[in-house]
Length: 401
Image (cartoon, rainbow, N blue to C red; front, side, top):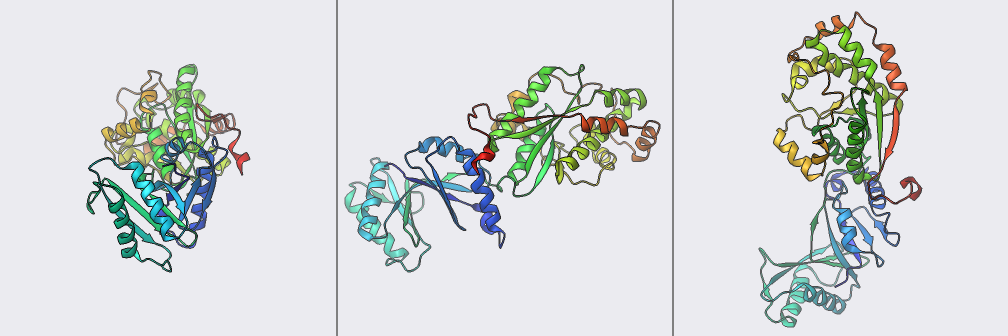
């Protein structure tokens, strides 16, 4: 059976009220960006459903693309048929016959979105189920765990048939929750945090701190490759490279060693917040997990957060390292993160960093040096890169709309 469309179910979007159309529009944009390599497809959307009309394009490749789009709860390859009962019977037989193997079971799952249709749910069950049992020798009914579940959705314009439900990525469409800056290191945690933030509808711009000659070009390439993995979700991601050498050297010279990590994180946060203001972001996302390292204790976060009133989002805050690693494997960033190239977070690490720093003490130490000119210089001298997926041969995605 050759499917002619893919039916997309919204999931969490369906719980929205008057602003549901905003979320549907964002999802439609995400789908169009992801499916840009398939020029013949057509996307139709309504308040309750979205359809990708294949028009001869490769349905298998399109299914793989749809699995990674946030905002899709599930989807099904489907065929559209007229509302005529005889047409429905024949199309159902053709679809089930194309999938049936000897000894398999089935059930019919009708959904009547249009209650004016001549058959009610029981009528659809009896009419279609009976026709299939008569027409396919050996076919049996199993209403609990069928091998084939024929879903029949009756709508005003047509009837849609499908037998397979594929889980989507869930979450909310990209960009529906605003823009945030992701503090992206070369480690395992921050790319996973970025992925989870994107899943909740945030448009992410990545900020990476680069300290040559202490960090190499290979470490920079590593972060670009991590950004490329995140870009596979949305077609492109902005990576902002911050020159951080001067700030780190000043910290090394001016701040007591056991407080240097706290001040380093505070300066990073101040710089990221300055970039956020220029880029019109609304929040900052980090890969912090409670208690994982010295700078991620509650006391450290309290002392570090003091430099900004901007919301700091920590998607990994309660997660175990093993769970984070599993997610990194799932999104294919773990191998890149494990490359042996240091970033600025791993150089100048004190031998005994404070795990319970005092806010008043770090303020006192920083008061002897004016960091503001170095912070402004770092904000103004950033390098901005638009990173696209490795296999992206499309033109700028904005030209699609």
